[in-house]
Image (cartoon, rainbow, N blue to C red):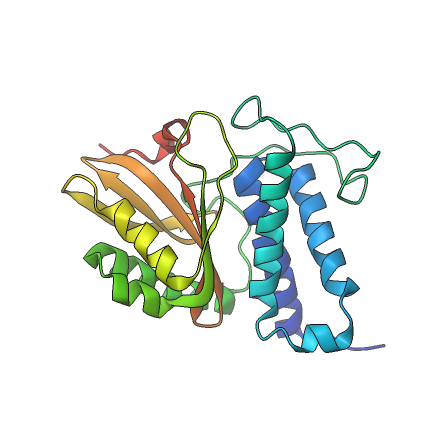
Length: 241
């Protein structure tokens, strides 16, 4: 039997939790998120050894696939409410059947209320996320590009009351421009480093009112994806006096 070291196991568990957080951010439904993660790994193991060997950063590949599956599912049917998403039926469903029963929870939780992965992984994530936050605070597009992977993507909910599918933006230059434009609104935008889904993330506030919450996906020393909530209804808990 192949032995798995404690460090490798922690990485694997953290990777799966990371993918679950992406799907939970999009849907807020644990059962749907679990199906998305199952399908993401199914596609990974459907690759042959040579194809997998050509993928330099597997975590980044898995992140892109999970994000794409989320967007495909969002685009497949109208969404009646921000946190309501029907679970796909078994006939012709794009995901494996029968995940465990859902346990609803918010897509973005303040103050680290979710289970934490290995401390070393969190420390690495924190270091990279803080570099990103510092660049955002300065509004420095060049510094933003420096911390982003070349094929990074950004996905936001569009800021509407209903969660509508929003086409992701790909590439470090395009992501840096998008984030810079988000910061280029009225003066007085505060960039705060806070816990988002149990990991270091960013909260943008103006006069104490949250205007955006961002979680980031990290692989190595780079950010591979930025997940931004703009919907005012979802930002109320992030307001500060």
